[in-house]
Image (cartoon, rainbow, N blue to C red; front, side, top):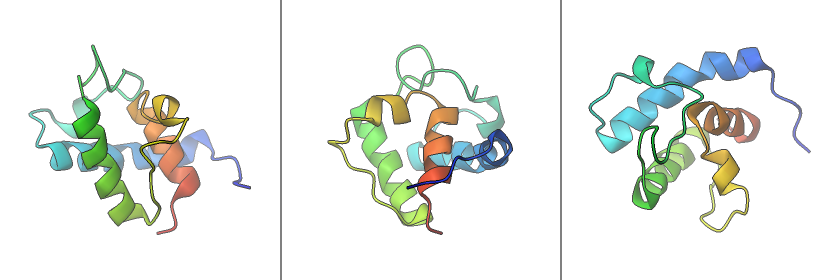
Length: 94
């Protein structure tokens, strides 16, 4: 069972995760310019399934837990930068 993660913990981790995404995908956007609540797919960062695989790989390496492509919660996990960061904060081992 994971303990609830405070909004402050998520807010503190947001810049790091945004930087990770920008570097992993070579995005032409400043990490600080990513709206934490905007969708990562579609009108937000316009990511696709290949981008998600890249992000999952760097997250696994950096934070010490595996993200599974068949996880039924992936749509929720990757809904926004804030949702992804909250998931990382709850699951990270490093």
